[in-house]
Image (tube, rainbow, N blue to C red; front, side, top):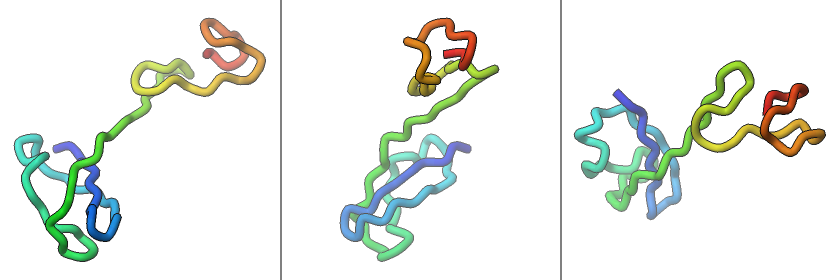
Length: 75
């Protein structure tokens, strides 16, 4: 089951919930204030393999490269 991130628009509390994909957008109360004005956040992730970016945002460069095939940082 995936972990989804939510934010309460009443108290601004952010929290995570482990739930089935079929329930991702089902209403749920805020963990902090119990409010019902809760929205699922867009979750962005980053994954890497052997120092190379494979998903999500790009990995930071080492400062001596312009990206591509840097032998120092693998960027």
